[in-house]
Image (cartoon, rainbow, N blue to C red; front, top):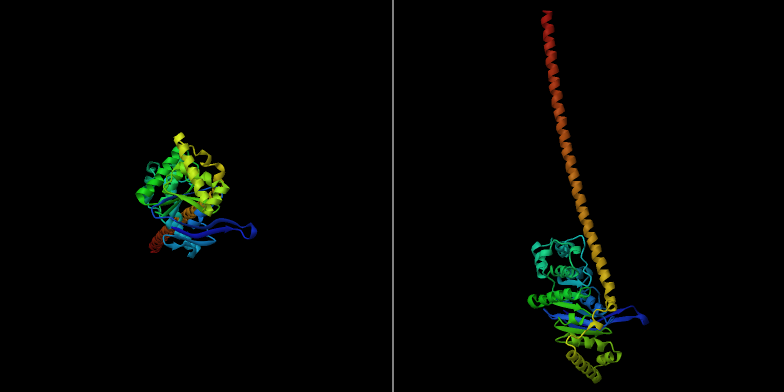
Length: 366
């Protein structure tokens, strides 16, 4: 997957807002990339453009060798369905369905019969095969997120997008989910692009890409939580951010000083606390509207699917009624034929009686 000089502007004229500004990034197959930045830095817009959910104002997005800008909406929808998987902060599971049914739902919505073996393999990959028949209310938050990951994996996507996948989880559940994502990359060659505010979560990736004001402000390879936290703190300083964009020597010096300070802090405190920048509520606000819109879309699709199921049941009921009516007609016809036979028998008996009466009269006359 590759983004080349991608820009996304909302609105026109003096009030126009540039969410992405000529971003160029590549994501190798089997790689794990975390995208980070302050609220409003363009993380969610980057994810939406890369996944084909949003068309960029300028530039190109290439997925599996296909330029998304050349695709019509129907072809783009088909590519997303077959090539891209999504995991969101809110799990978006349907409460009336079991874990197994939720995992197979994308295939049903695509008009395909879910392969039971593939569904169970996806649940097994996230360690929930023994919870296949449990409904979401019977699962913990971490287990529900793992079902959501299995649902994203069932169609064997080339790229998996994760938008704050641990944002609503406790630390233990977060570690489990992040370990699963790491295993998918290391053992199955899955390509993962994850948006997160959490330095600990980002440290599970191979590379961290930092955004500021819609532009790439730096990358970190290999990442570690203290350095990630320090870099995020640096990005919050307007002076440092401007220097980073300009590529001045002062930016390098400031970043080096920050890293040295982080190293001293790490030595003094074996467990540095990245809490000031880890999952602040205000930082999640930029993803809430997107999650809500997607949840509404999925709920709408589910209602359509339920409507289709109701229509099928109604058709079946009508067919049963018609078959019953046909059987009733057959019984009635049999009854009519039986009545006709009885009438013929009675008529025959009458004719016999008449014949006998005639014989008696003849004999009497003689």
